[in-house]
Each structure stands twice: as structure tokens, then as C-alpha cells.
Image (cartoon, rainbow, N blue to C red):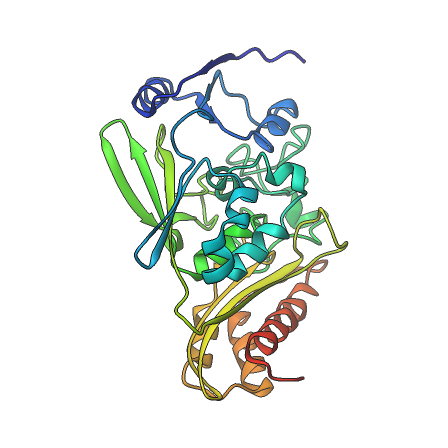
Length: 330
């Protein structure tokens, strides 16, 4: 089926914002690694694409104890940056475990944070029941194949998982998204950027129509912090997570002075495991504590018949990651 659309490009941020603000059915185009596929499948049908790849949003700059990353920076560029390797190693690991080198050379940081779910029902427009794609139609995954679906942050309207590896590491770091619109700009903490489905699964984030992510601000890990990103999947490469864990800790001897924990592959949004952090902070680093933290992280899980395995899998993934960063043997 032919679905015509207009294409234009600009190298001026104000022009891009004005064009998008004047047309509610327009969409920004950067790397396009997922967006074009969704258009081909008929899931996305913008009337106009505004190519923003030439906008001056490619910088990576350290400012004090924060790293500012332009939204058009590619995933491979960020993974290769020395500040990331030295001060955010688990962010680097999350990037390198995402997709292929070819895709990482195209995909942008802003686009990665905005990527859509890999739920088969969302991506098949011949399936009528998908509240995320067509609000009010139902959720085919609930009664259909849901092995890879979420167990945290779900609702009766949607159980689709969020696919980004990078967002899991960034949400653990309290990253902040910088956004521009025709009337100015604002910042949104990543912990408040994503929206669980509730009654409105088609509203996935806090962006308003026409807004553009211009940068992501990431606090650097303190000196002496240890971090790791562990991704469990069906195959070793080019596969999305069944469960993943991003962990960063600061140790005082064998006591956990502070901990940051986030989970991926198991939730409708990148999942900050605050309950696990509370268990870990001030505790002695040992496997029994890690197991208690993992149980706390998954306490609110609502598994379904085909994806119940994700609860113990996510718990074991988190325990293993904690063992790795603390040096505690199993």
C-alpha cells in the first residue's frame, strides 16, 4: 500500500520546532533505524518527516561532574567517548550490548530513548487489538503470546516492554532530558520522562506535540564507584533483553555506602528499583543481602502464564550483577 508523505530537512533548530509545531501529524527524523520500519509496516503514518540530522546537536561535553550529550550523537560515538569509558562504564556496556555496530553508527541517543516497543502485536497493523497503537481496542498480548512481555508497571490495557538498554543505565544515574519547543525549553528527569500504560498506553512519555529532545545530561559516577550492566537474552547478539540490570555502588570497606539499581526487559518503562536500593544502602555486601534486594525489586511483579519465568530470571540477573560489582562470590 502506498502511503505518501512529505519530506524536508533543516539545519536550524528554530525552523524545525516551528515546522513541527505547525503540523500535529509531522514527525522528526534522525537516524531512522526504527521509525522507517514502523512506517513501512503501517504502524506510524506521519504526513510529513522533518529531517533533523543536520541540526547542531552532536556534541559530547563534560561540564563539571555532568556529561552533556547532544541528542543527535550516535550510540557508537557515545560508547567510544573517553569520559564515558572512565566515569560511566556501565553506560558504555549498555550501549555496546545494543543492536549491531552498523545500527549503533546510525541510531541517535535521542532516538534510542524514544524507541518503541518490540511487542509483536504493536508492530503488526493487521492485529486490531493494540491499545498502544489504536487506543480502546484492547491488548492482544494479554491473551496471546506474551513470553517477552512485561511483569512490572503493567496494566490491563498494555503489557508491552520498553526496549532500550541505554535508558536503563541512564535512569539509574538520574539523567535529565533537555527539551525544546517553540515557546522555550524545559528539563525532565528521566525518572519522570516515561509513563507506565495505566489507562493511556498510547502516551509513552512526557513530551508534548512538537517538542524535541536536544540533549541528555548525565551525572558522572563518583571516584571509586563500581558499575556493571548485565543483559540476559535468547542469543548473544542483536537481541533484546529478557532481563537486564544496571548497577552502580560505592563501597566503604565491605559496606555499601550507596547503590543505584535499574532493571530492563521486565517492565513497561526503564525500571528504577528504588526498593532494592533501600535494602542495599548501609548493608554489608553479601549474597543474602543481594537476594533480599532482588526480592524487593520484583515484589510488585504481575507475571502471566508465559512470562512468569522473568521474575526469578530478573532476580538472578540482579544478584549476579551485584556480585560482580562488589566482588562477592556466590
